[in-house]
Each structure stands twice: as structure tokens, then as C-alpha cells.
Amino acid sequence: MRITNASMVRSHLYDTQNNLTNMSKINQQISTGKVINTVSDDPHKAIKIMNINNEIKYTEKYNSNIDETVGWMNTTDGALESTGNLLNEIKETILKVGNGTYSQNEMKSLNADINEKIKQLADTLNSTYGGKYLFAGTNVDDAPITVIENPDGTVKLEFSKDKNGQTIPNTDDLKADISSGINIDYNISVGEILNIKDGNGNTVNLLDEINNLSTLMNDIANGDEQTAAKAKETLLNDTKGKIDTLFDHVVNERTSLGVRVSTAEKIKELNDEDILNIQDVLSKTQDTDVVEKFIELKSAEMIYQASIQVGAKLIQPTILDYIR
Image (cartoon, rainbow, N blue to C red; front, top):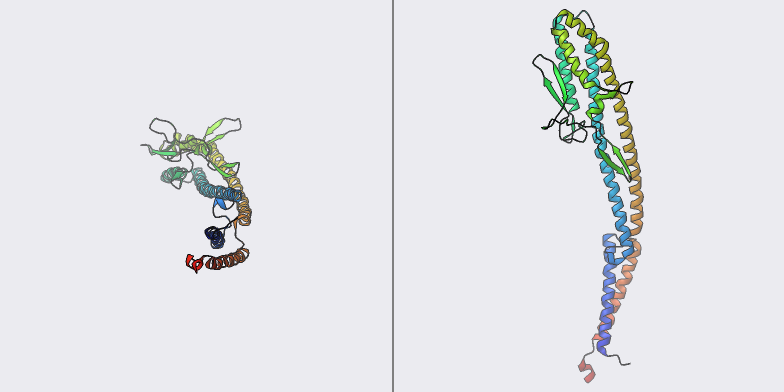
């Protein structure tokens, strides 16, 4: 077989280009710290790396959801703590009413204090987190409680209504995915706080009791002797017990919320462990062994330099050399 000079030159240039490409690839692996930089480097490993990266991103998103929900629940817990403190202060005021040494003017002062506490209670139940109302169920853009100040001096709280007259707050749960296949309910609605079940399984609306409290205090402070006496009896024997029930219910809701916070934080710890384990697998799959690749680079450089030197001798002769 006759091999021409042109054939040898083409073959040599092809091999030299391959040597240069190989050297460039190794150099890129060292500079990027990754063995796989394009899918064509190793399609199987490239797909595996993409799947691992996606898994890390999903787990990090779960942790982001946990941070958001824990922040929401901690703010809710603070609002419930304030609610409990206000209910305690209301109970203390009710006990003062039972003290027969208070004058009529002092009763009027206690009445004004109760009304302020009720309005503060409404403000607490309208607490927000990141511009969203905590206790409105899934209708987080609307305040759940409306305060009405009546001409007779009483204060009334109502569940807020939209323009169609429909109640805004609902008892629907806000849910968030916190791990693969696991989600958590992270809100408490105002309905869950103020509507509770009695011993017979009947729903008791404690919002009515709060409003009744304002009416009774107004009767005690401003009514005649008979009206005041009857109102005081109802306040001490019935309404006070309902306020105690509401306080206990708020404590129970805080306990339930605390369990959910603890669960979310524990799952975040597990997610963090998963991320570390996945990153270890990713590192073993795609990270460059710098020492090994540096040796390969030096070897590739030596081969490339040798190919250049061979090419210099191969391409050097011209037709004039053959004529001579």
C-alpha cells in the first residue's frame, strides 16, 4: 500500500488535535473541580448528577418551607400568649367586680378597662405575619375580626364579612410540604379558638360570651340597682366560667402548636442530614481528584509536545527537497 506524504500529514494533524482536546478537557476538569462538565463527557454520570442536584434542591425547598411555617407558628404562639394574658387580665377585672367595696365610679372605670381589653383582644386576633392574617384560615388577606363600638358604650366583636355578607375567616388548614410525602398544618383559625365543644358535644361560641361580657359590665356600671345586681350575678357565676374555659382552650391550642413546631424542627434536622449525605454522594460522583488529574495533565502535555516535535520533522520536507 502506498502512503502519501499528505496522508501522513492529515493523520498526524488529527492525532495532534485529539491530544490537544484531551489536554484541554483535563485542564477544564482541574479548573472547574468537576469530572463531568458536559453531558457528552459521560451521559450516564451526567444524568445521575442532575438527579442528585434536583434532590438537593427539593430538600432545600422543604427546609425553606419549614423555616416559613415555623416562623408563622412562633408568631401565632406569641399572639396566643398575648390572648391568654388579656384573658387573665379580664378575669382579674371580673374578680374586682365581685368586691363589694368598689364605688359606682370605680365600676365605670372597670367597665372602660374591660372594653379596652376586648378591643386589644380583637387586635391580637387580627395579628399578621408577613402581611398575612394568622387567624383567618385560608383567607389570609382579610382581617378575621371586626370591632363595633355601640352608642351605649358597649363593644362588640364580630367575624368579619365580605361584600356579599359571607364570613371571611374559615377553619380551613394552611398546609406546607416539609419532607417527601409529609406535610403539616401550620395555622389556627379564629373559629378554632372561639368555637369549642362543650361536654355534650355542642358547639359553644365564646365570641358571644366576650360580647356578653361588655353588655354585663355596662349594666353593672350604668344600670339601676336591680339590673346591676342581676348582671353581676350572671358575670360572676356564668361568664367568668366561660372566660376560664376560653383561657384553658387557648393554652391547649398553644400546646398543640408547640408539638407541630417541634415536629417541623426535627424533620428539618433530618433534612439537613439527608442533604449532607446526598452532597457526599455528589462529591464522589463529580468532584475532580486534583492530584490524579494533574498527573494526567502533565502526561497529556508531554504527549502533545512530542506530537508537535514529530510534526515539525514530518511537515518540514518540501518538493524542492525531493528535486534536490
